[in-house]
Length: 164
Image 1 (cartoon, rainbow, N blue to C red):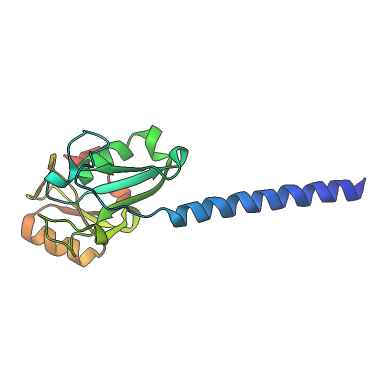
Image 2: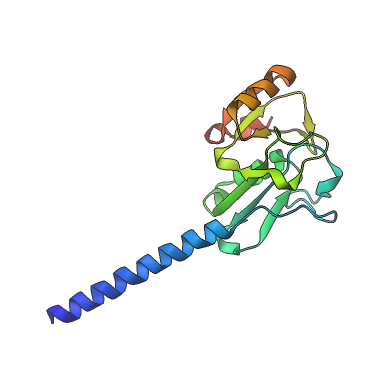
């Protein structure tokens, strides 16, 4: 009987390890996708490539490899901050605006949104008006803030007030 319980325990433990490994592999495989000319914002439906400023995209755990693209970081975070969405996000990306011009964000420079620095309340406009400028380095966010105003914050400080 002891052998049966030990075997059962080992089976369950191995199953859990495999499940965790698959989840980690899935997260590692999710990358930012190029924004195509016909892509529409998941939140507002506007054509993403028609607008300047940083864009964003994310993946939901309940939708596998389906990427949701957004015309601005404002729309991205408006969607993300909904509690129903927040707990289901597996990957979230924004443009690194220290590497691309405001008027032409380059899809080669998407970064993990959770490690980015942001400037909230700057004079720069995105697709939906005010937007969060996103940067991979804090010093770049500070330099942007010195030039265009706004407050430098990290991912954890983003809330609906930061989007105003």
